[in-house]
Amino acid sequence: MTQAFDRRAFIKAIAGASSASILTIPSAHAAKTKARVVVVGGGYGGATAAKYLRVMDPGIEVTLIERETLYTSCPLSNEVISGERDIKTLQVGYKGLLKRGVNVVHDEVVNIDPAKKIVATAGGKSFDYDALILSPGVDFNFGTVEGYNEQLAQTKLHHAWKAGPQTLLLKKQLEAMPDGGTFIIAVPKGPFRCPPGPYERAAQVAMYCKHHGKAKSKVLILDSNDSFSKKPLFEQAWKELYGYGQGGMIEWVAAANDGTLKRVDAEKMMCFTDFGEYKGDVINIIPPHHAGKVAKNLGLATFKNLWCEVKPENMESKSQKDIYVIGDACVGGELATNNGFPKSAHMAMSQAKVVVASLVAKFNGLPPPEPIYTNTCYSVVAHDWGFSVVHLYRVDNGQWVYIKNGSGISPVTLGTKEAPKPVPRMYRKLEAEYADGWLRNVMSDAFL
Amino acid sequence: MRKGILALALCWWASSAMAVGNIDVLARTCNNCHGLNGVSAGTTMPSIGGLPRGYLSKIMKEWKYDKRVAATMNRIVKGLSDDEIDALATYFARKPWVPVPQKTSAATYAKGKATITENCEDCHGATGNDPDEGAPRINGQWAEYMALELEKYREEEFLMPHRKMKKTVRKLKESEVYPVSEYYGAQNQ
Image (cartoon, rainbow over all chains, first blue to last red; front, side):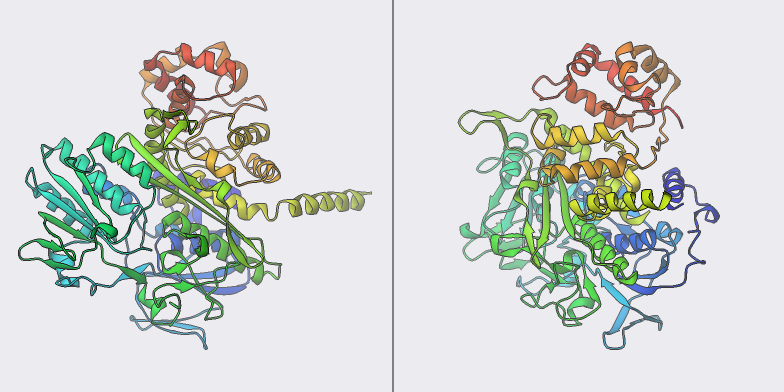
């Protein structure tokens, strides 16, 4: 029955039809409510949790609380800045979840009482829960760079690290940049949302300049880190496509080479590191961030006062019972070997599915299922050049175990170590094409 | 008698389920890229629900043991045991095959139809819905995905299995790759 439903729902959804009658979950009214779950935050993680709870057990009452009525995907939003992608292709509303029987509430959470298990909203509503899933994403710390503040981020020095209005503002600044101008991207100390994001952005900006008569321009990455995600793949592509390093379009300054941005003069459009100063025509500062306020204010961000620690078996908060934290706000994975969970959409969805499987088992009196966590993340550096990283984690003895064999980046070269061969361009083209398929599928799997 | 069969069936189910943990949990990680019940929403990613078990199991093992090139899947499946791969193949093979609606022009469709050969029909069926156990259904599969897959067969540097497939695909002209894909993609909607 559910299979037939899913099929119809899917076909209806991709056909853009909106007949609700056929899409109501048939057993929803018949089944007695087994439990009430409240999900806070309707990004990839929260939406997936809400949807899958309904798919797997219509007897669970699910309320999703989310401020916005339209979601804009962060993944592939760098392509909007370069004009390669219309932002509309990244946007999705909550009708799909309504059709799944999720009670979608557009409101802001103002208080959570973990003892009484009640969530209260700014709109004056309150919701009881048996389990609470927090997927609040990140909030920014604007105080680490002197001369920078939240207002400047909105008016002049956009971060565009939450896709939406700032993405389009940054695109406009790039379009207005003169040939020979410098586009500065300042990267905060990790971990941050979307580990390869700043470097993909650099490529997208360079691509725009190359194809729009601004080939003398420069993209300067001022980095607070000494390495980054998919580094050999990015450096190879930058070098071949846009020129990298001295004389190239893209230049990367590591923290060890004084790359950390310390101060900005928005008036003069100057960036200052300890010993260096750089004039920018566009300055894109990505501020450091931490677990979203709703989780942080509850005292759940126990890891360096930044991120929320959770249990490997089911993502339950280590400090509050029956509260689960997923997505960019949490910290997990094999931290000791530097193989923590990347803060990505795919990872958030995977975490959501682990929570759902655990809760459905619990509410049905079944033993907890064995969790598994996966990630796939594509970066697109030109319309025909993409690459990816995949991650696999299992849980053993109550600990996350990073499975090296099911993880890793696209090949940098083929052949042997002694006699390396270049990777055929077709390979890179395939991954650029797959990135788009991936996007449509993750959006569909989370929101429809 | 009936009870006995049921008990036996349950026993079999329990033991195979235990060998690979909870297969539903693992299978749902595939949904991110291949869709709920294996019905893909992305034109470059294949639907996998309802494909023959033998094909699914074979292709995942070919990637795992580096007998076939892939851009992403070859890395992902290396973390899975052969038992998990077989269980995933069974899981998705049991789902219904859902042809996805796609647009094509009459001219492209006609060109595609004229291009397909007996070799295509032998393994996939005339309209792509009658595959051999080792071959995928392709009626209503995403045309864009199939075109990319054909490009992989045409790229001499790529390690691809199946001599007959390679030979057939390499005979195609570049201008025939999309029409053939769109012809099969447009079936059964």
